[in-house]
Image 1 (cartoon, rainbow, N blue to C red):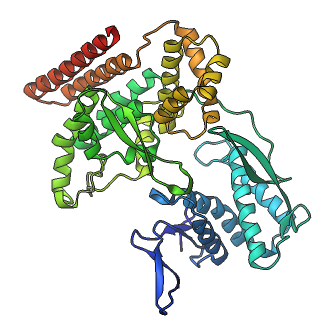
Image 2 (image 1 turned 90 degrees about the horizontal axis):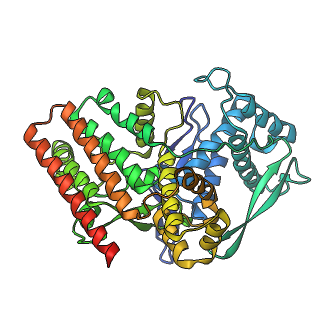
Image 3 (image 1 turned 180 degrees about the vertical axis):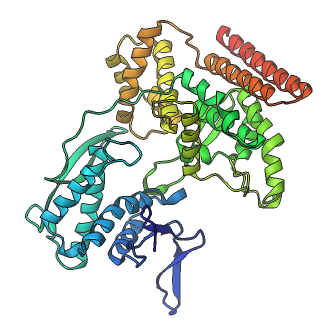
Length: 468
Protein backbone atom coordinates (compact mmCIF):
# COMPACT_ATOMS: atom_id res chain seq x y z
CA UNK A 1 0.00 0.00 0.00
CA UNK A 2 1.36 3.42 -0.99
CA UNK A 3 1.80 6.10 1.65
CA UNK A 4 -0.61 8.96 2.10
CA UNK A 5 1.57 11.45 0.26
CA UNK A 6 2.26 9.75 -3.04
CA UNK A 7 -0.02 7.66 -5.26
CA UNK A 8 2.29 7.27 -8.25
CA UNK A 9 5.68 6.03 -9.34
CA UNK A 10 7.57 6.62 -12.59
CA UNK A 11 8.43 4.15 -15.31
CA UNK A 12 12.14 3.33 -15.50
CA UNK A 13 14.67 5.02 -17.75
CA UNK A 14 14.67 1.99 -20.09
CA UNK A 15 10.91 1.37 -20.20
CA UNK A 16 9.39 0.97 -23.65
CA UNK A 17 5.70 0.94 -24.49
CA UNK A 18 4.29 -1.62 -26.98
CA UNK A 19 2.75 0.63 -29.61
CA UNK A 20 1.68 -1.29 -32.68
CA UNK A 21 2.14 -4.13 -35.14
CA UNK A 22 4.34 -3.88 -38.20
CA UNK A 23 3.37 -5.37 -41.57
CA UNK A 24 5.44 -8.47 -40.91
CA UNK A 25 3.45 -9.13 -37.73
CA UNK A 26 6.13 -8.04 -35.27
CA UNK A 27 5.25 -5.67 -32.44
CA UNK A 28 7.15 -2.40 -32.15
CA UNK A 29 7.60 -0.21 -29.08
CA UNK A 30 8.45 3.39 -28.26
CA UNK A 31 10.58 4.95 -25.54
CA UNK A 32 8.30 5.71 -22.57
CA UNK A 33 10.50 6.54 -19.57
CA UNK A 34 9.37 8.83 -16.73
CA UNK A 35 5.64 8.25 -17.20
CA UNK A 36 3.80 8.32 -13.85
CA UNK A 37 1.69 5.27 -13.00
CA UNK A 38 -1.15 6.08 -10.61
CA UNK A 39 -2.61 3.75 -7.99
CA UNK A 40 -5.49 3.84 -5.55
CA UNK A 41 -4.43 4.28 -1.89
CA UNK A 42 -4.68 0.49 -1.40
CA UNK A 43 -2.10 -0.10 -4.15
CA UNK A 44 -4.41 -1.18 -6.99
CA UNK A 45 -3.66 0.44 -10.37
CA UNK A 46 -6.05 3.30 -11.18
CA UNK A 47 -6.97 2.30 -14.73
CA UNK A 48 -8.86 5.42 -15.86
CA UNK A 49 -6.17 7.78 -14.54
CA UNK A 50 -3.39 5.79 -16.21
CA UNK A 51 -5.25 5.75 -19.53
CA UNK A 52 -5.61 9.53 -19.25
CA UNK A 53 -1.89 9.99 -18.56
CA UNK A 54 -1.13 7.75 -21.54
CA UNK A 55 -3.42 9.99 -23.61
CA UNK A 56 -1.45 13.04 -22.37
CA UNK A 57 1.83 11.26 -23.16
CA UNK A 58 0.67 10.73 -26.75
CA UNK A 59 -0.13 14.45 -26.96
CA UNK A 60 3.55 15.13 -26.24
CA UNK A 61 3.36 16.54 -22.72
CA UNK A 62 6.74 16.94 -21.01
CA UNK A 63 8.18 14.12 -18.94
CA UNK A 64 11.63 15.55 -18.22
CA UNK A 65 13.47 14.83 -14.97
CA UNK A 66 10.94 13.74 -12.37
CA UNK A 67 8.22 13.33 -15.00
CA UNK A 68 7.70 16.97 -16.03
CA UNK A 69 4.13 18.05 -16.77
CA UNK A 70 2.87 14.46 -16.63
CA UNK A 71 4.02 14.16 -13.03
CA UNK A 72 2.35 17.47 -12.18
CA UNK A 73 -0.89 16.03 -13.56
CA UNK A 74 -0.39 12.87 -11.49
CA UNK A 75 0.11 14.92 -8.32
CA UNK A 76 -3.03 16.98 -8.94
CA UNK A 77 -5.16 13.95 -9.88
CA UNK A 78 -4.03 12.18 -6.70
CA UNK A 79 -6.36 14.44 -4.69
CA UNK A 80 -9.41 13.27 -6.64
CA UNK A 81 -8.31 9.63 -6.51
CA UNK A 82 -7.95 9.80 -2.74
CA UNK A 83 -11.30 11.60 -2.37
CA UNK A 84 -13.13 8.97 -4.45
CA UNK A 85 -11.41 6.12 -2.60
CA UNK A 86 -12.30 7.50 0.84
CA UNK A 87 -15.95 8.01 -0.17
CA UNK A 88 -16.29 4.82 -2.24
CA UNK A 89 -17.12 6.74 -5.45
CA UNK A 90 -16.30 5.64 -8.97
CA UNK A 91 -15.26 8.43 -11.33
CA UNK A 92 -18.16 7.97 -13.77
CA UNK A 93 -20.72 8.02 -10.94
CA UNK A 94 -19.62 11.40 -9.58
CA UNK A 95 -22.31 14.08 -9.49
CA UNK A 96 -22.04 17.85 -9.58
CA UNK A 97 -22.64 17.89 -5.83
CA UNK A 98 -19.86 15.33 -5.29
CA UNK A 99 -17.42 17.46 -7.27
CA UNK A 100 -18.46 20.59 -5.35
CA UNK A 101 -17.83 18.73 -2.08
CA UNK A 102 -14.38 17.71 -3.38
CA UNK A 103 -13.49 21.36 -4.01
CA UNK A 104 -14.75 22.39 -0.54
CA UNK A 105 -12.62 19.66 1.06
CA UNK A 106 -9.55 20.99 -0.77
CA UNK A 107 -10.33 24.53 0.39
CA UNK A 108 -10.96 23.61 4.00
CA UNK A 109 -7.92 21.45 4.67
CA UNK A 110 -5.53 23.01 7.18
CA UNK A 111 -1.74 22.91 7.00
CA UNK A 112 -0.42 20.61 9.76
CA UNK A 113 2.96 22.39 9.67
CA UNK A 114 1.45 25.88 10.06
CA UNK A 115 -1.32 25.97 12.70
CA UNK A 116 -4.22 28.19 11.73
CA UNK A 117 -3.26 28.40 8.04
CA UNK A 118 -5.01 26.80 5.07
CA UNK A 119 -3.03 24.13 3.26
CA UNK A 120 -3.80 25.55 -0.20
CA UNK A 121 -4.37 28.98 -1.66
CA UNK A 122 -7.33 29.57 -3.97
CA UNK A 123 -5.15 29.42 -7.08
CA UNK A 124 -3.84 25.97 -6.18
CA UNK A 125 -7.37 24.68 -5.51
CA UNK A 126 -8.48 25.92 -8.94
CA UNK A 127 -5.45 24.31 -10.59
CA UNK A 128 -6.34 20.95 -9.02
CA UNK A 129 -10.00 21.39 -10.01
CA UNK A 130 -9.22 22.28 -13.63
CA UNK A 131 -6.90 19.31 -14.07
CA UNK A 132 -9.49 16.98 -12.55
CA UNK A 133 -12.24 18.33 -14.82
CA UNK A 134 -10.05 17.63 -17.85
CA UNK A 135 -9.56 14.09 -16.57
CA UNK A 136 -13.29 13.59 -15.86
CA UNK A 137 -14.11 14.84 -19.36
CA UNK A 138 -11.83 12.08 -20.67
CA UNK A 139 -13.57 9.56 -18.36
CA UNK A 140 -16.91 10.58 -19.90
CA UNK A 141 -15.57 9.85 -23.39
CA UNK A 142 -14.13 6.56 -22.14
CA UNK A 143 -17.56 5.47 -20.88
CA UNK A 144 -19.35 6.83 -23.98
CA UNK A 145 -20.88 9.73 -22.06
CA UNK A 146 -19.36 12.73 -23.89
CA UNK A 147 -21.62 15.20 -22.01
CA UNK A 148 -20.55 13.88 -18.59
CA UNK A 149 -18.69 17.16 -18.03
CA UNK A 150 -20.16 20.25 -19.68
CA UNK A 151 -22.51 23.21 -19.27
CA UNK A 152 -25.53 20.88 -19.15
CA UNK A 153 -23.65 17.76 -18.06
CA UNK A 154 -23.75 15.61 -14.96
CA UNK A 155 -20.88 17.75 -13.70
CA UNK A 156 -21.79 21.29 -14.74
CA UNK A 157 -18.57 22.88 -15.94
CA UNK A 158 -17.65 25.07 -18.86
CA UNK A 159 -14.55 25.96 -20.82
CA UNK A 160 -13.31 29.53 -20.98
CA UNK A 161 -10.70 31.20 -23.15
CA UNK A 162 -7.71 33.37 -22.42
CA UNK A 163 -5.84 35.17 -25.18
CA UNK A 164 -2.07 35.57 -25.01
CA UNK A 165 0.44 37.21 -27.33
CA UNK A 166 3.68 35.30 -27.91
CA UNK A 167 6.30 36.49 -30.39
CA UNK A 168 3.73 38.65 -32.16
CA UNK A 169 1.21 35.83 -32.52
CA UNK A 170 -2.05 35.56 -30.64
CA UNK A 171 -2.50 32.27 -28.79
CA UNK A 172 -5.88 31.18 -27.44
CA UNK A 173 -5.77 28.89 -24.41
CA UNK A 174 -8.84 27.16 -22.97
CA UNK A 175 -9.37 26.15 -19.36
CA UNK A 176 -12.14 24.56 -17.29
CA UNK A 177 -14.30 26.45 -14.81
CA UNK A 178 -16.73 25.12 -12.21
CA UNK A 179 -19.16 27.15 -10.09
CA UNK A 180 -17.64 25.73 -6.88
CA UNK A 181 -14.17 27.14 -7.58
CA UNK A 182 -13.02 29.72 -4.99
CA UNK A 183 -12.71 33.37 -5.95
CA UNK A 184 -9.22 34.49 -6.82
CA UNK A 185 -7.24 35.99 -3.96
CA UNK A 186 -5.22 39.19 -4.32
CA UNK A 187 -1.98 38.24 -6.03
CA UNK A 188 0.87 37.92 -3.56
CA UNK A 189 3.84 39.89 -4.80
CA UNK A 190 6.98 37.83 -4.48
CA UNK A 191 10.06 40.01 -4.23
CA UNK A 192 13.55 39.01 -5.37
CA UNK A 193 15.85 37.58 -2.72
CA UNK A 194 17.96 40.32 -1.13
CA UNK A 195 21.75 40.53 -0.88
CA UNK A 196 21.38 40.38 2.91
CA UNK A 197 19.49 37.10 2.78
CA UNK A 198 21.97 35.58 0.32
CA UNK A 199 24.75 36.50 2.77
CA UNK A 200 22.79 34.83 5.59
CA UNK A 201 22.41 31.64 3.54
CA UNK A 202 26.15 31.56 2.87
CA UNK A 203 26.99 32.20 6.53
CA UNK A 204 25.08 29.12 7.77
CA UNK A 205 26.56 26.69 5.24
CA UNK A 206 29.33 25.49 7.65
CA UNK A 207 26.78 24.96 10.45
CA UNK A 208 24.58 22.57 8.46
CA UNK A 209 27.26 20.79 6.42
CA UNK A 210 28.90 17.61 7.68
CA UNK A 211 31.56 17.21 4.95
CA UNK A 212 33.82 19.51 2.96
CA UNK A 213 32.23 18.43 -0.31
CA UNK A 214 28.74 19.18 0.99
CA UNK A 215 29.89 22.61 2.13
CA UNK A 216 31.46 23.44 -1.23
CA UNK A 217 28.50 22.12 -3.25
CA UNK A 218 26.03 24.25 -1.29
CA UNK A 219 28.07 27.39 -1.91
CA UNK A 220 28.30 26.53 -5.61
CA UNK A 221 24.52 26.00 -5.76
CA UNK A 222 23.85 29.47 -4.32
CA UNK A 223 26.36 31.04 -6.68
CA UNK A 224 24.87 29.33 -9.75
CA UNK A 225 21.36 30.43 -8.84
CA UNK A 226 22.55 34.02 -8.48
CA UNK A 227 24.65 34.31 -11.64
CA UNK A 228 22.39 32.36 -14.02
CA UNK A 229 18.85 33.11 -12.83
CA UNK A 230 18.11 29.57 -13.94
CA UNK A 231 15.22 27.35 -12.89
CA UNK A 232 15.89 24.40 -10.54
CA UNK A 233 15.88 21.80 -13.30
CA UNK A 234 18.17 24.02 -15.41
CA UNK A 235 20.75 24.45 -12.64
CA UNK A 236 20.70 20.69 -12.01
CA UNK A 237 21.40 20.13 -15.71
CA UNK A 238 24.59 22.23 -15.90
CA UNK A 239 27.42 20.03 -17.15
CA UNK A 240 31.15 20.01 -16.43
CA UNK A 241 32.07 20.09 -20.13
CA UNK A 242 30.15 23.34 -20.59
CA UNK A 243 32.14 24.96 -17.78
CA UNK A 244 35.40 24.05 -19.51
CA UNK A 245 34.01 25.23 -22.86
CA UNK A 246 33.26 28.61 -21.26
CA UNK A 247 36.77 28.69 -19.77
CA UNK A 248 38.34 28.26 -23.22
CA UNK A 249 36.60 31.37 -24.59
CA UNK A 250 39.05 34.26 -24.79
CA UNK A 251 36.49 37.05 -24.46
CA UNK A 252 32.80 37.22 -23.65
CA UNK A 253 32.63 33.82 -21.95
CA UNK A 254 29.15 32.27 -21.90
CA UNK A 255 27.78 29.24 -20.07
CA UNK A 256 25.48 26.83 -21.89
CA UNK A 257 22.27 26.26 -19.88
CA UNK A 258 19.39 23.95 -20.75
CA UNK A 259 16.09 25.84 -21.13
CA UNK A 260 13.07 24.17 -19.55
CA UNK A 261 9.37 24.86 -20.18
CA UNK A 262 9.38 24.31 -23.92
CA UNK A 263 6.36 22.86 -25.70
CA UNK A 264 6.31 19.12 -26.30
CA UNK A 265 9.45 18.79 -24.18
CA UNK A 266 11.82 19.81 -26.98
CA UNK A 267 15.38 20.42 -25.85
CA UNK A 268 16.70 23.98 -26.15
CA UNK A 269 19.66 25.83 -24.67
CA UNK A 270 20.60 29.41 -23.95
CA UNK A 271 24.03 30.95 -23.41
CA UNK A 272 24.55 33.19 -20.39
CA UNK A 273 27.47 35.60 -19.84
CA UNK A 274 29.64 34.46 -16.96
CA UNK A 275 32.54 36.21 -15.24
CA UNK A 276 35.89 34.43 -15.50
CA UNK A 277 36.24 34.50 -11.73
CA UNK A 278 33.02 32.48 -11.50
CA UNK A 279 34.34 30.04 -14.09
CA UNK A 280 37.48 29.54 -11.99
CA UNK A 281 35.30 29.01 -8.91
CA UNK A 282 33.41 26.23 -10.72
CA UNK A 283 36.58 24.66 -12.12
CA UNK A 284 38.11 24.65 -8.63
CA UNK A 285 35.03 22.82 -7.34
CA UNK A 286 35.20 20.26 -10.16
CA UNK A 287 38.90 19.49 -9.86
CA UNK A 288 39.37 19.56 -6.08
CA UNK A 289 36.05 18.27 -4.76
CA UNK A 290 33.74 16.77 -7.37
CA UNK A 291 36.47 14.61 -8.90
CA UNK A 292 37.16 12.90 -5.55
CA UNK A 293 33.48 12.00 -5.21
CA UNK A 294 33.40 10.53 -8.72
CA UNK A 295 36.52 8.44 -8.02
CA UNK A 296 34.99 7.10 -4.78
CA UNK A 297 31.59 6.30 -6.29
CA UNK A 298 30.79 5.62 -9.96
CA UNK A 299 34.29 6.07 -11.38
CA UNK A 300 35.39 8.27 -14.29
CA UNK A 301 34.07 5.87 -16.94
CA UNK A 302 30.54 6.06 -15.51
CA UNK A 303 30.53 9.80 -14.82
CA UNK A 304 27.43 11.31 -16.47
CA UNK A 305 29.02 14.76 -16.41
CA UNK A 306 26.55 16.78 -14.35
CA UNK A 307 28.16 19.41 -12.11
CA UNK A 308 26.01 18.94 -8.99
CA UNK A 309 26.15 15.33 -7.84
CA UNK A 310 25.34 13.29 -4.75
CA UNK A 311 28.30 12.63 -2.47
CA UNK A 312 27.09 9.10 -1.71
CA UNK A 313 26.18 7.92 -5.23
CA UNK A 314 28.02 10.20 -7.64
CA UNK A 315 24.77 10.64 -9.57
CA UNK A 316 23.04 13.85 -10.59
CA UNK A 317 21.17 15.64 -7.80
CA UNK A 318 17.39 15.43 -8.17
CA UNK A 319 15.51 18.69 -8.65
CA UNK A 320 13.68 18.21 -5.35
CA UNK A 321 17.04 17.84 -3.58
CA UNK A 322 17.99 21.34 -4.74
CA UNK A 323 14.75 22.64 -3.25
CA UNK A 324 15.41 20.84 0.02
CA UNK A 325 18.94 22.26 0.18
CA UNK A 326 17.57 25.80 -0.01
CA UNK A 327 14.90 25.06 2.60
CA UNK A 328 17.56 23.66 4.93
CA UNK A 329 19.75 26.76 4.59
CA UNK A 330 16.80 29.16 4.95
CA UNK A 331 15.65 27.44 8.13
CA UNK A 332 19.14 27.54 9.63
CA UNK A 333 19.49 31.22 8.66
CA UNK A 334 16.10 31.99 10.27
CA UNK A 335 14.84 33.76 7.14
CA UNK A 336 11.09 34.34 7.29
CA UNK A 337 10.60 35.21 3.61
CA UNK A 338 10.21 32.48 1.03
CA UNK A 339 13.57 31.20 -0.19
CA UNK A 340 13.50 29.18 -3.39
CA UNK A 341 15.23 29.08 -6.77
CA UNK A 342 12.56 31.35 -8.23
CA UNK A 343 13.48 34.16 -5.82
CA UNK A 344 17.02 34.07 -7.24
CA UNK A 345 15.49 34.10 -10.73
CA UNK A 346 13.45 37.18 -9.78
CA UNK A 347 16.67 38.85 -8.63
CA UNK A 348 18.55 37.99 -11.83
CA UNK A 349 15.82 39.26 -14.18
CA UNK A 350 15.16 42.42 -12.16
CA UNK A 351 18.87 43.30 -12.19
CA UNK A 352 19.00 42.63 -15.94
CA UNK A 353 16.11 45.03 -16.47
CA UNK A 354 17.67 47.69 -14.23
CA UNK A 355 20.82 47.54 -16.35
CA UNK A 356 18.87 47.80 -19.62
CA UNK A 357 16.85 50.75 -18.29
CA UNK A 358 20.03 52.58 -17.28
CA UNK A 359 21.88 51.78 -20.50
CA UNK A 360 19.10 52.98 -22.79
CA UNK A 361 17.81 55.78 -20.53
CA UNK A 362 14.17 54.73 -20.57
CA UNK A 363 12.12 57.38 -18.77
CA UNK A 364 9.16 55.27 -17.62
CA UNK A 365 7.61 51.81 -17.66
CA UNK A 366 5.62 52.46 -20.84
CA UNK A 367 8.76 53.37 -22.79
CA UNK A 368 10.53 50.22 -21.65
CA UNK A 369 7.47 48.02 -22.27
CA UNK A 370 7.14 49.44 -25.79
CA UNK A 371 10.82 48.79 -26.46
CA UNK A 372 10.42 45.17 -25.36
CA UNK A 373 7.41 44.66 -27.61
CA UNK A 374 8.69 46.55 -30.67
CA UNK A 375 12.45 46.21 -30.49
CA UNK A 376 13.43 42.80 -31.85
CA UNK A 377 17.07 43.07 -30.71
CA UNK A 378 16.18 43.99 -27.13
CA UNK A 379 13.41 41.40 -26.98
CA UNK A 380 15.71 38.68 -28.28
CA UNK A 381 18.42 39.59 -25.77
CA UNK A 382 16.01 39.45 -22.82
CA UNK A 383 14.57 36.11 -23.94
CA UNK A 384 18.08 34.78 -24.53
CA UNK A 385 19.09 35.61 -20.95
CA UNK A 386 15.90 34.52 -19.17
CA UNK A 387 14.55 31.61 -21.22
CA UNK A 388 11.05 33.14 -21.38
CA UNK A 389 8.98 32.40 -24.49
CA UNK A 390 6.45 35.16 -23.81
CA UNK A 391 7.35 38.80 -23.24
CA UNK A 392 4.06 39.28 -21.36
CA UNK A 393 5.29 36.99 -18.57
CA UNK A 394 8.08 39.49 -17.86
CA UNK A 395 5.61 42.25 -16.91
CA UNK A 396 6.12 41.99 -13.10
CA UNK A 397 9.86 42.57 -13.49
CA UNK A 398 9.32 45.88 -15.29
CA UNK A 399 7.65 47.33 -12.19
CA UNK A 400 10.34 45.96 -9.87
CA UNK A 401 13.15 47.29 -12.06
CA UNK A 402 11.77 50.84 -12.22
CA UNK A 403 11.22 50.82 -8.47
CA UNK A 404 14.87 49.88 -7.98
CA UNK A 405 16.07 52.56 -10.40
CA UNK A 406 13.96 55.16 -8.58
CA UNK A 407 15.25 53.97 -5.22
CA UNK A 408 18.94 54.01 -6.03
CA UNK A 409 19.21 56.54 -8.85
CA UNK A 410 21.98 56.28 -11.40
CA UNK A 411 24.14 53.29 -10.65
CA UNK A 412 26.68 51.39 -12.70
CA UNK A 413 25.27 51.01 -16.22
CA UNK A 414 27.64 48.36 -17.51
CA UNK A 415 26.21 44.88 -16.98
CA UNK A 416 29.58 43.24 -17.52
CA UNK A 417 31.41 45.39 -14.95
CA UNK A 418 28.62 44.87 -12.43
CA UNK A 419 28.81 41.11 -12.91
CA UNK A 420 32.59 41.08 -12.45
CA UNK A 421 32.49 43.07 -9.21
CA UNK A 422 29.68 40.98 -7.74
CA UNK A 423 31.48 37.80 -8.73
CA UNK A 424 34.62 38.98 -6.93
CA UNK A 425 32.62 39.91 -3.82
CA UNK A 426 31.06 36.47 -3.73
CA UNK A 427 34.38 34.73 -4.27
CA UNK A 428 36.01 36.71 -1.46
CA UNK A 429 33.16 35.54 0.76
CA UNK A 430 34.05 32.03 -0.35
CA UNK A 431 37.70 32.53 0.63
CA UNK A 432 36.65 33.71 4.09
CA UNK A 433 34.35 30.69 4.42
CA UNK A 434 37.20 28.31 3.62
CA UNK A 435 39.52 30.18 6.00
CA UNK A 436 37.12 29.50 8.89
CA UNK A 437 37.02 25.81 7.91
CA UNK A 438 40.76 25.28 8.10
CA UNK A 439 42.00 25.44 4.50
CA UNK A 440 45.79 25.68 4.42
CA UNK A 441 47.38 29.14 3.98
CA UNK A 442 49.08 28.02 0.74
CA UNK A 443 45.80 26.84 -0.81
CA UNK A 444 44.04 30.01 0.34
CA UNK A 445 46.77 32.20 -1.11
CA UNK A 446 46.53 30.47 -4.50
CA UNK A 447 42.74 30.67 -4.48
CA UNK A 448 42.70 34.36 -3.54
CA UNK A 449 45.37 35.21 -6.10
CA UNK A 450 43.43 33.44 -8.86
CA UNK A 451 40.21 35.28 -8.03
CA UNK A 452 41.86 38.71 -7.87
CA UNK A 453 43.94 38.29 -11.04
CA UNK A 454 40.98 37.12 -13.10
CA UNK A 455 38.75 39.94 -11.82
CA UNK A 456 41.39 42.62 -12.48
CA UNK A 457 41.98 41.28 -15.98
CA UNK A 458 38.26 41.33 -16.76
CA UNK A 459 37.79 44.84 -15.38
CA UNK A 460 40.71 46.02 -17.48
CA UNK A 461 39.19 44.44 -20.59
CA UNK A 462 35.80 46.01 -19.82
CA UNK A 463 37.41 49.42 -19.40
CA UNK A 464 39.31 49.08 -22.70
CA UNK A 465 36.16 47.99 -24.51
CA UNK A 466 34.28 50.99 -23.13
CA UNK A 467 36.86 53.43 -24.57
CA UNK A 468 37.03 51.86 -28.02
